[in-house]
Length: 433
Image 1 (cartoon, one colour):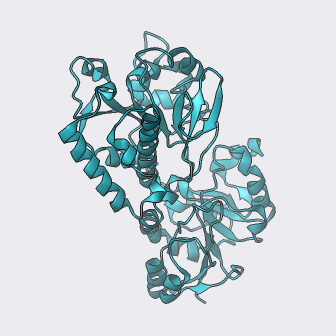
Image 2 (cartoon, rainbow, N blue to C red):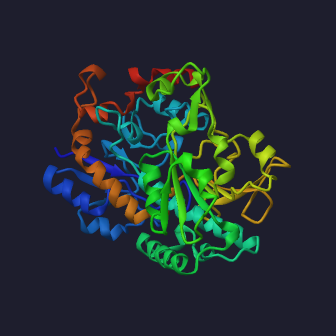
């Protein structure tokens, strides 16, 4: 008997139009592996029901016949069926409080949970991800917010022509407009009040690389963190300066007798403190692209912003917080935003936030599902990275004990729950339940 998998419709918000498996891959797994696909109907998914139907999928609200169900975002508690396997971004591995009720329900139902975020190779590198597209969309939205903030401050500049990511028909259209802006900057230059315009990137992984792809469409000169101050001596208004910060730039050992060591920092972060704030006043835009947990130092604190924001030499206008850890690495990120209004303003004097970009303070872009703003491109990319593992997930025997569970090793590392119980690597989540 052939296996049957399901594709759940996404309805977390109206912007979520992605699909984990594209129509072309539905046809591929049917022809190569005889795996059937049932797709829940959706009025907002980027691919139409007809596109799936033409590639051999069945369209049905009922996924009860499916052995494994694939989705993108968290699933509602009443969606889970007894003993089924679900594959999605669960946002549970940090013990996220808001998703513990969902995890409990899955445990009660004896479900198996496979989390895309933990599908990794032997070196721990993620294999199935949207990170690049979070970076692409987040950078566009941040440049939009930057332009709007400057426009509100009556500063004429070309960034005000940039639209929100969701207002472009495609990534190509957004890149085309950025290329035109690049040509303008090369020819006309930026107003002197903005020069030097320095864009900082905290982190250098897939998210950061995606964001840098967008900024690199502009006339860029990359500099080192140690060169930031010297740029102010003779800046060019026909360039944008890009600086990428690695861990050794952002933190240093508390003890003067100790040297920075990357693995020591990750294993013993309490021995280090942040030095990142020394760079912040020189940046016009900061993109936060780092993985962060509470054990790590913050990049920016409220105390620092309150102390320095009103200094004459403080230049930071906007933070593109792509990582979006609430009150995390960027302490002023106190909520998430959505694609309709990607930004809010943090007022350091009042310690308050207001949606939009027109109030006094620092603008923060904090959309928590940025890849959905490029639904076609991100779904194609994601499905291509997922397709090598679909047969293994669909054909696995979920009746055996976990030690005997035969599934590709990359996937086995991503099994959070197995038949309703936390697997050995994730037993630490018990303390959050």
